[in-house]
Length: 408
Image 1 (cartoon, rainbow, N blue to C red):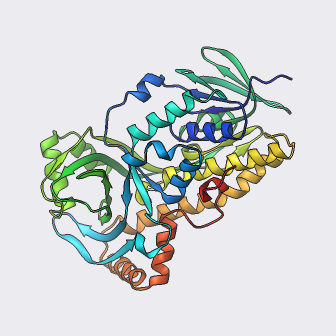
Image 2 (image 1 turned 135 degrees about the vertical axis):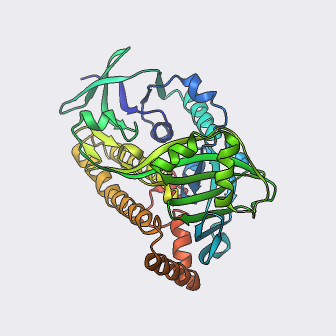
């Protein structure tokens, strides 16, 4: 039976385009299906959204020829400071301090604005003749058989592929149509996200403050700007989000403190509900899931995109190796290798972020004392501290070749 493409990727956010480019670099024909119009994605103004890319993720992008075009717009994260806090009281004397100088590889990661990363990926996809883009297109049905999968498209008939990859987020239609069940629950928290300009330089330091309602991250951007990811209870977040900018800043200031000097908003504000969403399986016959379609976690450690990119690197490697061996790239055996590689790590990340959020999003005095002692202990032990630094940099575990700076 003839195929229109080797691999159809549903979802044009960030993981989908990176996967398309990785597979194309291995000589595969790829179709990328995105429900949004490409002009909407390309022309987005700065809206405060930014990503903490671990060092391993930037190595992967560099290996695909992507990092070079955005490196000058990225802010290195040279230090991470983690502490307890309460609004208006300043940080706790018990803390963890991670410095990139303690490892040989360089900065632990980089902060990159969504607008820069997204536009660069769109340009790279458009310039690769092995990738076909279907923009403003929706998948309305899918069916699989022994040799491939067929997607029914709202506007362009049917597409036949050897393998379908769902990179279509937590509400993944790809996974739902494949019968993949999910474990999901809400944290009763909402993330308030914005960017701020401030008087004092941040010196490349990222701050994670654990407030009673939820964590507050202050992440360095280029110039005297920082990204804020701020968790509050759903009720409080709705109230705060409804405030005008001046009143919103009045609520934010005592939480941030005065160490950055005067602050003001830079770009738009937005919010989203927080919860855990974990697919019971990452694969089904002729189907694979990556990124949030497989695992949506709390942003407490800023690892959501990095985990998705590790899925992408692992799946691309499995497919490229299967192709070299003359295997069916969408076979049960190939997909089983991908799931075995990534499923445990993703479940572990989900458990860790869930546990950390529950541990730190409360003001119980005994729990607070225990976590402060724990942070002080980690900070006092150089070997343990370096282990946390390497974890933050994405340098631990069974890394795919792309994340080691190697080619497929």
